[in-house]
Length: 196
Ligand SMILES: [Zn+2]
Image (cartoon, rainbow, N blue to C red):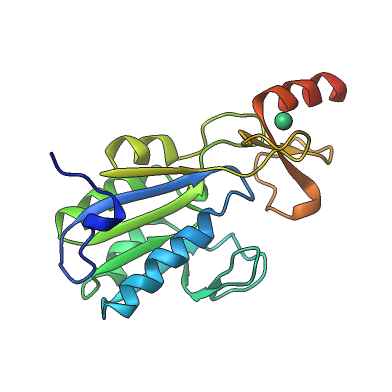
């Protein structure tokens, strides 16, 4: 049996695979993506990072996590564009993958089949608890899935979903700390009842 735990990852060996890091907001997804990419860079791997062009929260050029631990990236409009930038690359990082089109699944498979390590970070669910964009399919085809959790701000248990505090029905509302709160399933259902 092949175990894809970190102890078994050879940073210097070129081997195609797909890793997904998913979870709610405030769960540390982007921090984990950046951590893995920095380790690959230390190992002299050629790393390229992509994010959806629409995610321009803080910076056009950087993948930026909430604690400002950032890493340079390329904003792109469609998943197919990733293939244009990855001919000489060992490791591809993709942040905010939930905002990409469904074509991302095929793109990631192609990259991995070409020997590239693909690390994807994204929201598993939207604020209503509905699986988000290509993330469910990416989890299915991934070699390794890491689900990270925030902490429920009401009770301290592991959070399950990002509850939207502001009144707005748009699915895509870019994450700001004061518009969402991480909640466990029980506290989320209580909050929904209070919202009605
Ligand atoms: Zn709770």
